[in-house]
Image 1: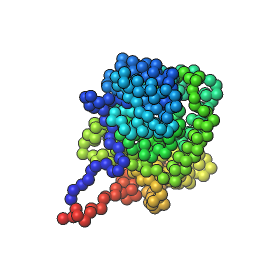
Image 2 (image 1 turned 135 degrees about the horizontal axis):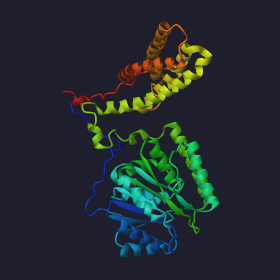
Image 3 (image 1 turned 180 degrees about the vertical axis):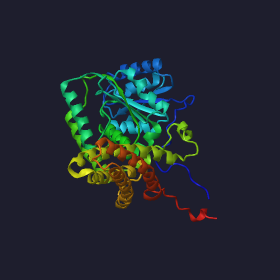
Image 4 (image 1 turned 90 degrees about the vertical axis):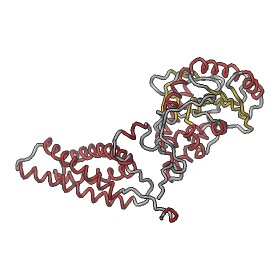
Length: 425
């Protein structure tokens, strides 16, 4: 019976260093512009000179004109004609997100980037921005003005707005990246191909939505501290942009809460580095990944258990404290292993999994309670707290191996695809 090992719809391949193709650009830097006839020429020439001098691979600069009404289209066409590696495209509708989506969707370069036309970000950060994408280390990269080592010159109002917005993202969408609005980002093309169809915004919120979805899908986002000087002639309307951003935060947060986005299809397979696949000879890759996840969850669960036991013991005694601490940590452990170790998402069979996890908990309770009983029988006098903890840690370690085997074989067994009738001979 044939076995299909190809990735599912939308799945991303394991990361790998990019192999440059002769005659093809490795990097495509997009510059979205609207009515920039004055600054476009000097900025593009400055960027081109910098890339020619510092970037070790072929590159392209793409000017994306967002329905400009001044001479910007003529300036862009002239640059595309006279400067090697520069091209221009015209959009009849405004929107930075629309411009990036259009150019990135058409580009054949394996690394796609963009920056603001005013070049507020120091260009020396460009190579550090894209290097992790070329090497295969990361999926996306962003410049951050909020890192401690960044050097930023801008007014108090813009500083406040930027920090308040990123605080909003952290509190409402649980975002962990530090600077969503910096106009200095890059993405690998195969990641863009999967993410762009999920991003609805076509304006300034495009960046934030892209990053939130990438982060929720488990993709790797690299951050580069940048030196940044505010453009006093910026045409960004802060109030209107903030209003649109708030609408975007609400829309994306609601979609994530309802599980309306198929982000699970964007997860990378285990073994981004091909060497990982031979690190454990004879062990299935799925088992190796599950072992790593189970150990990480188990360590955190053990710490939670010890904290709860220490908190409950003085009021309830060792046996009751052990039972309560183990029960609470077991519920958290089952939920974490369900999602992180065995990749089960959604609410389907969640109650059943918790019930089975409680059976596993009962086994752990029997082992740890039996250990305490044995300790009390061997040492009738009140045992030292450190001795109790040592015995409990040993018992928990003994139960861990059995717990993993039960989780893998009984609670979260691997689902095997049902063979098609045509495949049965």
